[in-house]
Image (tube, rainbow, N blue to C red; front, side, top):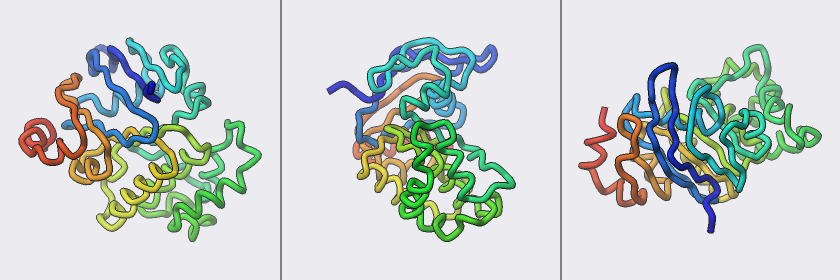
Length: 237
């Protein structure tokens, strides 16, 4: 079976810095795959390149049978690829409901907004209680859940998640990782960047380790979870 996402020889630059250097990997439909590595290894750059948010990149990206190289971010979104950045980008001055509505503003499903909010609210019970609350008054963990819920509004085939547990209290981290498991059961494929290695591997199928812009190791999540030497060599702060 062809992978949902196939990346071949991907290079990406920030200004003159060659951050990602010829990496190749794949993600199959229904998987959770984690990109691991220290800060600066190239993980966020990889996600941003997949979403078409960097000015300069090279290589091949195939998603759901479509070549993505050269396509702008909004066309990748219409192919049902979603992205939740580390900084969340919650819109101040809007309620939780209005932020969720933004997830369908450019979607063919925008006529289903009310029904989708009800569906999403059932999946995110914390948000269901706060639909009319000003979004930036939520806690950091609740804002992260809102960012994920907004991306899920258009029912993407695959979602790219960048450091979702960063700066969030442990009880909400637990809820969030339970949520990722439910998303997988409901058919959403996830490519995850996460510094909490143990938690990420506990819900993942496979993982790739990046170091200085290169993929240096890959394996099943169970193999990498058991290999503390690899974790300490490439992921320890």
